[in-house]
Image 1 (cartoon, helix red, strand yellow):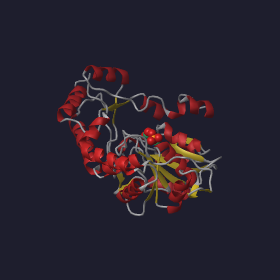
Image 2 (cartoon, rainbow, N blue to C red):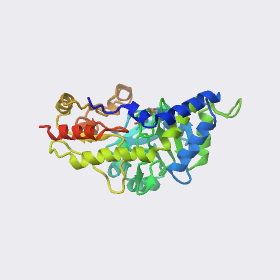
Image 3 (spheres, protein in one colour):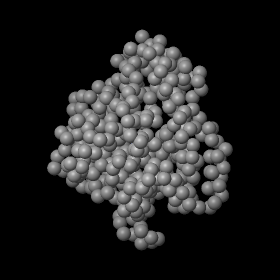
Image 4 (cartoon, protein in one colour):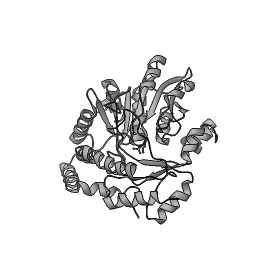
Length: 365
Ligand SMILES: Cc1ncc(COP(=O)(O)O)c(C=O)c1O
């Protein structure tokens, strides 16, 4: 069976470097808040673009929570997100006491700027864009509306490491950006890890205080903080992966390029690349009429698939119970969720595997 993703392949690509780094961290005797984290923060910020600062944290959800808190989002505020986004984005908003408000996605599965204004109320404080599946959101319309209406702009870049829009990496468009380095991500750790990025050093300084018990120096606590730190082992391993980012993204582009060139089946709608975007293919998503029939068929052909995700976040009990959302509230999102299927995409695939996926998809009737 060709898996949707198999993390050990990514490990094997640079196994010697990962093992060497892991051993050096273990032997160093320093495991939390040390030089690996500091170096990773600097290297990641520099790789993203000029003027960026970074604070490493323990995962992507906490990056969202801390980043929003450090930017002044809290109780009573509304934050606009796309309805087909990931539940963690909504949870981060809710953890800091604010309320997520939804907008439907566009044909690229990203927040639809044309519908944004309808969702703005007098409680709206911010727009939080999630660049889904490895592709940037088209930002002009969103930036214009945020500027006109005095709203902060945030980015969830958990799926869009080094996915530029008009030459600028996602993460550099707003007040702050939130990254996950969950192992499946394009820049993945070997456990949980995340980061907040901002061009505003004050935001990053606040995140660094909040992540470490609210302390600005040892045993001096100025905020009701958390323990949400990035550990040395993950930071060190992330530095290794970061140094290979270009090759890793090139591998994904090669796989996606073959899928796009060679898949020809009127029953399978391929993903679109928006003008100005350089897709990094965190996931390769197609649309079909009958999700289950297609998945069952591919399974028989030895190709594993996934759906990310069948139930939109606002219909998950933790949100529908609290805010009273019902089926039918966001029909574009529900239509998408009922038809999308994730095909195999990972850091390394054999040519023969790519061919088998293409042939299986093309033979679907
Ligand atoms: C869009 C998005 N936001 C947030 C997260 C949460 O990140 P983490 O799993 O590191 O908490 C994820 C992934 O898991 C994600 O895909």
